[in-house]
Length: 302
Image (cartoon, rainbow, N blue to C red; front, side, top):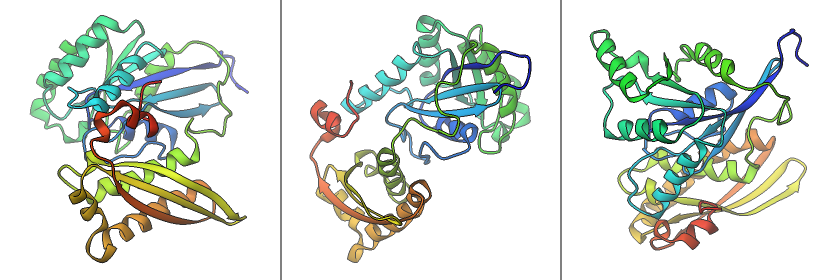
């Protein structure tokens, strides 16, 4: 119940930008839980994920989107389409950029997209302000202003929590009046199986390099509550080549064991009790190129 005289607000806020600018980190910071995995690998987020911030005066549903980039395969095209579609399905758009460096062509392309297609208020958010050298502040800021016409702006640091309150105030000022759209204790629209699959993939991303991270997908094959305090989860990690499978297994199975141990530690707080996690690795040739493969993995277009 809203304790003040101000009307309660609610609405959807899409966070868009090129890969690796901190979109998931920003959404997690607002929600207060890791509802979207993060890594230093571009294109970590593959599907639209909603994170829910509920306070007495408002409910903000943040829509974390895949990074908008020039796609190299069918998966990339699906990811970009999902992010582009989200722009006109929300009440406010946050255009998040890496404010520690000058914009590049990807930023310019997104700026043009928003200018041409977006019909809702846009907030320009220059992330990673803590990494920006003082002598570059004016030039970098003005370069991004030129890309995001008619947008309010804010410099911030999602990892350090700097100016997140000020950006949120800008967002709330543009949200429509309305009731809560989700239960107050819900922080995401994802189910536990989807969260678990992503947490497993996050551990793969943290431990592999080169082509392996982008070629990995995770599917939950079995989810069984065997006791009130024990859930058995069986998951398959898909890769595209035998060489990638060998890397993930590691010498004597050491890599797979390490992935499983760390993933289980991340999954258990969500489940609320002990988890027995069983991981398998299978080769699925060129799964990123095939629409039916993407659909089976929950990554295809609806």
